[in-house]
Length: 220
Image 1 (cartoon, rainbow, N blue to C red):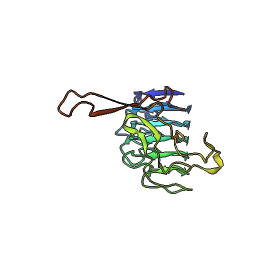
Image 2: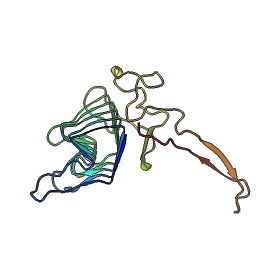
Image 3: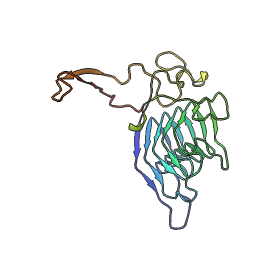
């Protein structure tokens, strides 16, 4: 498990294409890729989060690149989730020879799947707007708190029980869910409701709050 946050890949002085803001030519499992970028936004830089890598149960949030802002190059993504990655051309989630399985590509702009050059292969995945391939579908994954970087699934998510049946079962014994995290009805843990006297004109005891204790290791 790891967190790769705020990394930048710069063009070299010989003009080679920049790629892989967070990771290049690597393997990552259970990692967070957040706000990494490739500096060559006006050129052909790809893979703001990762490029030419094998990725499993990873989260990609707020990464930027000209193409494949989350993932590019010759990569595989299995049980991964994306949100709010930004590219110059369509393919903000994935672009290039990327093979995507059992994943969620959602709210990346402009467009989730790259259309220039090699088109990614996508199967058993939730893709905003849909995508060609085996058993892909569209919808709102009901991320728990996406703008805070929490891409756990909420109740009623269409990603629940939607992964490839051959991939096995989740901890609850049901068909696996798409995305980096299996749905957990108890998430977040340790919810505790309470109220206190309000000193304003609303009156005492009128304001209630909910205190949430999040898991210390959310990326698994």
